[in-house]
Length: 97
Length: 458
Image 1 (spheres, one colour):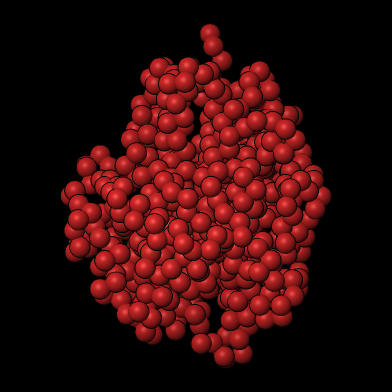
Image 2 (cartoon, chains in turn orange, red):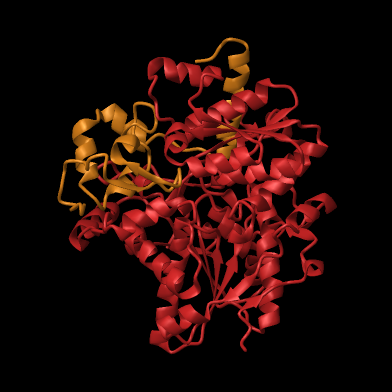
């Protein structure tokens, strides 16, 4: 399968590329919902060579979803860990969200 | 007969790790806890890491002794050999001398055990009975499983469901070393159960897996969590690689003009380069290049600007939010060196222009991997192929320039459990289609009137 970047329709699940985060081959449908209901924040970076992923996502995501995916402020890993520690402590107290 | 590989005797294995924090031109600022607006303190992390690792994360000591018990385990595969890539040089008809450091000789097949060994050790002496972690395809999970086995500790790995289902071999490796590997999201944690309640067929993600691992570590007595990249102590442990390289290069009589490594979270790259970065800070002329696994071509073909995530300007590089939203969001251009999953140390070196970044398209990396396999014999992990691809570029550049450059590349692991990726390439299922120049130029024009970031990458 030789995808053209002019294509707007995403490739079928048979077409897989290597995910730099997971370290193995995955299909576009996984990336589209990697972050719960939202796409992976690297989805455009990884798929832009294969079809017009940016155009596709702009047409399919709401403005809020688009912004939550690509404009949510990142944070240092250490702060992510601290957030998760707090969530875990809350979870023990039955406050898991 | 020419010497092909430089093998240090065990007696020459470094006895200390090198801590770049002592020599950074711009020291790392402490990360601020947004809840308190105060720097993160050890107490914030003691529920997941043992104190020796927390202390190493912020240590300013230049040299940190490697415990004897860690050295004993390192000796299983270290010192790792440094190879001269004569066959690749001949194939490329280049005057460059290419050396590659083979970090694929560890039992887990990658550089990851360089930190998994000391992490298991420091947990052991701190009273930890069980270590939790998360993994994707399993490179880190298998490394930690191996090292926990070496210290007779329990290890439980939350493996992203899609990886668990599609990458059985590393899961089996983990289980062979005695670890428990469960698919994430799982029914074993509140986090996992909440996700499964919404979507019973959820394929999982690294974010979900880390939530489960942390939840277990925090709420279980004598349990901790372990991370295989990004954090400063991980970079520290990996420096044994570069320190060995320095001794091995000295034996060859050469010194690298160019150093190349693939940068995901930064640990394999950091491991090789950091001792040489010290040399560079002290006056050596070395071109140190981190290769990004995938990226949009605007990143390397234009003056793409980035800023930091905090007002102090010292957190890992984050996208600048004033770039304008008509442009493809900056986050998506954030390849390995530029997104918040990257090591703060590597990010800082990039800002200080001590290292630089290149990106290479997927197809070229596999072409390079095939060339490397056919000339040097080793089948590289796909990540290592990025470094090989840039090495080939640099060697050909040296040929054009007629320069006998010395190139040192980190070969971070073998690809023997990654053959599906090669299969895709060999069957012609991968392709490259770069964006047209006019599209890139249009995007760059959009950037022109915007304010310049406080620090930018050229």
